[in-house]
Image 1 (tube, one colour):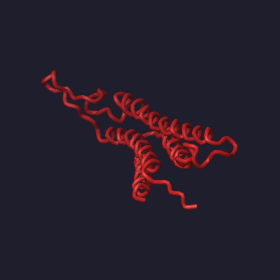
Image 2: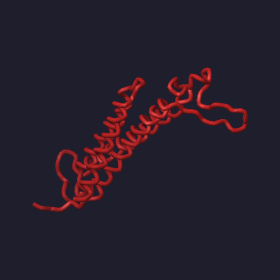
Image 3: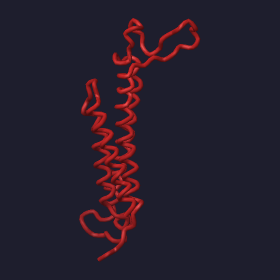
Image 4: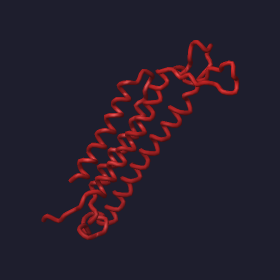
Length: 168
């Protein structure tokens, strides 16, 4: 029972972070950033809809596709879970970390259009100057990745943290 509570808390915290990132975003935000979270949520439902007995063939050996179908369903669920996690990591790196140097929100207007560093008299050690809007822009990328990481952990906790009892 405690694993269900922890899993639900992690899942809701992940979506709360994503909603916070969408609401707090001042730059254009693409709906494609939320597809990874939707895929992870679908994976949570797919993975946890298959019991361990169905996978091992103890309780489910009849039906349309039987044990192979349950294993295929679980496999597709894990593919979606890993795909959502890796997709959000790619979005974080490509859209929020790599493009951050050329992003107009990180340009300090007092530096005549230069990005990210304010070179002082000592040219060997530039001091970074990042505007507060740039830090908010970074937060959105990390929020989407953390959302998918929390949903992935929630999926694993809910699948492997509980015991399946035969009450029939």
